[in-house]
Image 1: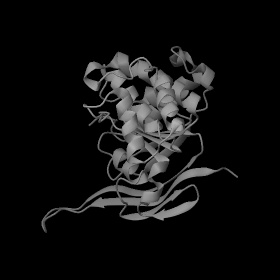
Image 2: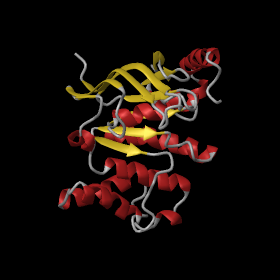
Image 3: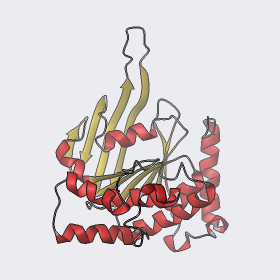
Image 4: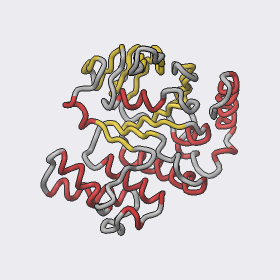
Length: 267
């Protein structure tokens, strides 16, 4: 039987207004999914469809209104317990680096908060900076780095405490087109090196097809799962020529037809 590292069962989320007259907003409706160990899963949907909210619920940043989250077989109820938060590494769209700390210092901050000390963790900092190609920039401050380099520091920081699951909330969305494409390939390389379980949000079909084992398509609000699509393109073929791959073209056409039926990705 498959080993599911992360499961969502009938997750719903409704935001209730602060005042009596404020209308409640249903963001997620009956989301159920299961992610196996070492999978790279992409949530694909239009802006404002609840993708980021779902990530926050799964990572314990927010609680669901109803439903259950299961981590490695342990039922968490509507909200992930504090004891399970170390299982997650989180990368935000705008990286949220500490500007007064160097690249190395940003990674060490996570270890300090989690009280992880010793030679093993010192070596881990160096290893993660090497994996993202920044071993020569460990003493450099965020404002001295390019946007793509800052995002790579963010990825290294999310990995430094050796989490089971990496959560990526549109990590490439704030980058220019060329940097975004380059970092997409770097993400693929990082996943192949670390073999972490990754759950990522995007609204870019090409990005999803390059990176994912599986794509989960979400509807506009209230977000619900339209379809799950297995991306059965060998990883050896996921390179700069991927758009010439016949299976890529078939999957892209299928996804775009579904997206058009719901009014497109961008609103």
